[in-house]
Length: 153
Image (cartoon, rainbow, N blue to C red; front, top):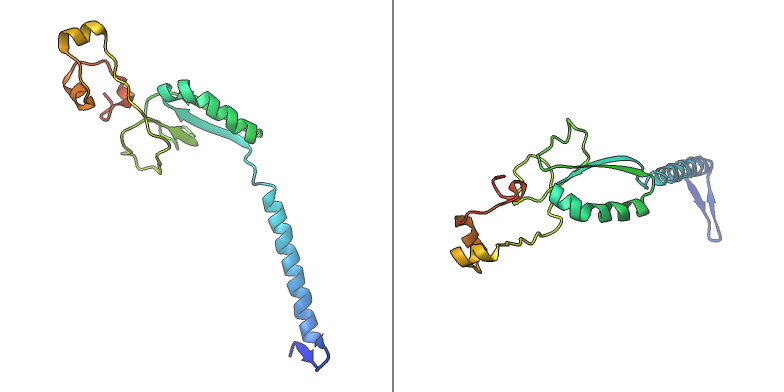
């Protein structure tokens, strides 16, 4: 029996007191452990990331700046390149790529849609005609950014 009950009071038995004291100590240990863990919720250390040249040169500086304002103890190291990197071998934490799909065996998620802009010189349009359907571009000679095409070139 852990508690002695009367019509007017509740009182712990000797066994109840031992269990109560031990449970209180365990809860205090849990609370101290959680307090210690809360100290590590703010990221710190080195974050190695890579991004495509097109995305990195246009958007990455602003994103990193905002990230560092929120997490000043992080040292961000960025490499802008269009090749597919081996994240494990090159010790890369995050890779941002503009791609039509994820054919790699890595966790990935879509961050934002990309709007394609097709441009042509007036003389080209005069000679070959224009189009309003982006699918028509596939049959034309174009200068493309290989890393941003579905087959990489």
